[in-house]
Length: 277
Image (cartoon, rainbow, N blue to C red):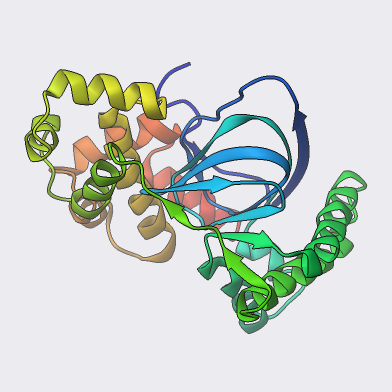
């Protein structure tokens, strides 16, 4: 599989699926998509990378991923439910203001469901799964809204809310933090290697081994994810987006963009507008 395959995904308006893998270590490639994501770990343990942060998820944890955020899970012996949806899906049933309020729960990154709230949240995840499988779109939207409201409530109740503590990978956390902070000005891998007093070869080899993609791909991922957001939410020209995201020319930006998502920036923007996203 190519480093760049499926790193940026244009998902369905809403998707729900359950996976049970009791025996095999099944890491996913580091990626992002244009939807919100709820990842409910029913059993097992997973290491979850969100942006430049690492989290240890145990059973009854929910990870909340915003559009454009790079993320990846690793681990074994797990069971989970995944729900992905676009903001536009909520707006089919609710006003813009109501949809924005429902999405406020995504200010948390990972939540542990306390015993007091666990059964209620699990019931809603399974209802959403059933609604999706039966193509009951209206009920799906309503149950999703109920779940988002519950997660927001949990986050506001200090006695019932515990956000999963961020863990620090002593080797890679500082590197990811540096790349995410300085992606616009980083000119070469050698610059990163010198910053952390390690050889370029060791940096590239260990980065690929740990995260499953090359360092240059990760750096480009950050730039392209920012570009996706700008193409969606602004009317800036392709050239202005390219320069703002750290590319030295519009040509380089367009070639890299098409390599990663199989569309040119203009085609991507047109696709969003055609789908009313």
